[in-house]
Length: 256
Ligand code: C5P
Image (cartoon, rainbow, N blue to C red; front, side, top):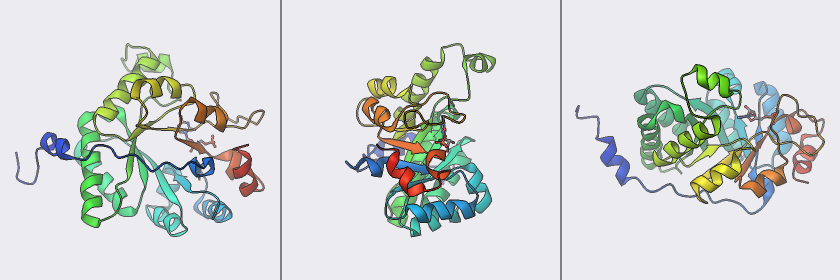
């Protein structure tokens, strides 16, 4: 083994166990606002929510428009930042990407569990070592299991023989064993995953709509209250807030 390549299995065993995010009791602090907008619009929405919202989510569209500087901009406005990076590559690449995202100030980001155990271990190792060396808090790592855009037929096309819920459950288990702090789960998966994973892993849930609201392209939705009751720690809400004429009012309304 080359000298600059530590034995990751040994190192992994030395890592701290996944520490729990200091989860707030106030539900308004558990809403992550998805800024699926241009940079200009995203910053306008963020400004409107300053002092009310705690978390902002930046996805691939915004990240590829601005680069990681958007993370620092939002941090400087006082927000926690969830970078929905959906990383999936060879372990060496993911180690570098995870280190860069940590240095950029992300508080939480996503990796695909089907990238494999070693890839997830490397991500975990990189966030830990980068955060330690820069004396900053370690970002939380969330695993994506099966995207909600994938159905049973597509899974079979990929050669996956088990049912979709089984595959979600397999990948979630793999992710937690590899040191991930939690998973992204659709409203329909929360209860199953909470029962499987226990109380500690984070469950972060998109697909949130107020009862009677326009679902847009989301087919499996729940209200914020239903998601929290099923066991979600944090919820992700985009268009119901960002497309509203008054995003601040809409932010408060989602919790009613
Ligand atoms: O606008 P809306 O509330 O539907 O946005 C939901 C956010 O959650 C988007 O940023 C989307 O990428 C993300 N997401 C999702 N469904 C998943 C996983 C992530 O809608 N299964």
